[in-house]
Image 1 (cartoon, rainbow, N blue to C red):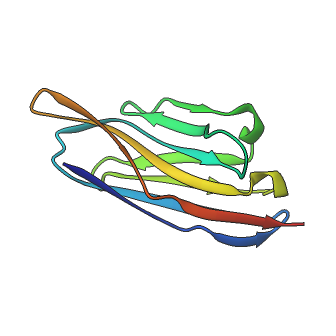
Image 2 (image 1 turned 120 degrees about the horizontal axis):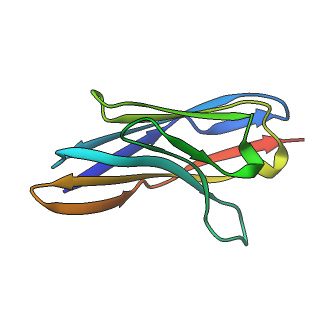
Length: 119
């Protein structure tokens, strides 16, 4: 079983910065994908950014140039550096981890961390 723990959300003013972290633990041989999704009130959950084992990353168009995703494979941790935050970035941010262990694949979601950007 895989567990993920998120941290780093909070309240920030427009133009400010926040850094989210997500650490995975448990039955893991390799983590193929780590990333962040978000869900604003009344909206569907959407991809923010993901990073693959080799380091390739994908971003939503709305965050390109402002957010940076990175990972530390040794620590099984993914980070999301968010800069130039806008009110429309307000949402619950969920960590996502896709891992493998003894031939089986797991997809694990974090409990979510609130990010609120005030105007």
